[in-house]
Image 1 (cartoon, rainbow, N blue to C red):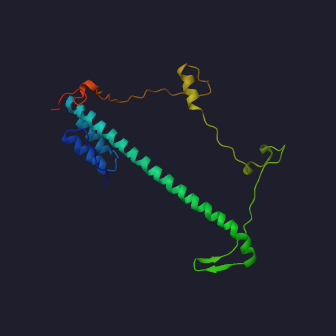
Image 2: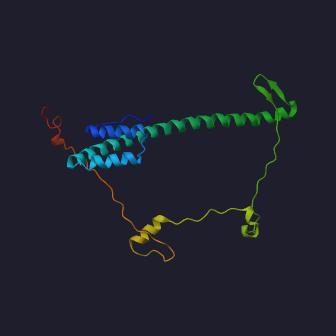
Image 3: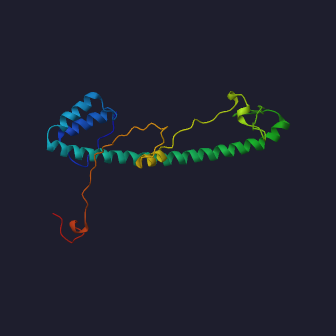
Length: 196
């Protein structure tokens, strides 16, 4: 089931039906929906104006979803912190119980039988003066190196990318909406004028 389409700006029925279809499709644009979108937009200047309003509605819906995700993220972090605190207390209680259980052995309760289980553990460290390369390759790992894209972007802007680097240049085209600004003098309440 898709999310409800939030419309601050009124658009044509065509766009409202289209956005509802996208919403019902969980926000996925199928090939058929893309063809329908192109068909609507190619209807002239008034359709582009509708598209601007629809785009703004979508941006508002995206911001609303981002805001909700931040709320859920905070709730998740709060719940995780609570779980971590309870687990830490449980672990400390376990540590306090070990010396007693070593004396008493297992203890049966309505919650279950409590006993000590001994599991071998190992910590490994390379000896001083030794090198990883002297070990079998299966015994150590090294992260794969990656390119520093920001540094390369800075070099590309001044035409100084090293010859060992393959560069593919392109241009990103974005549709921007400059929202009208509201000045104090334009606000009938702020300017002392009566609203119609």
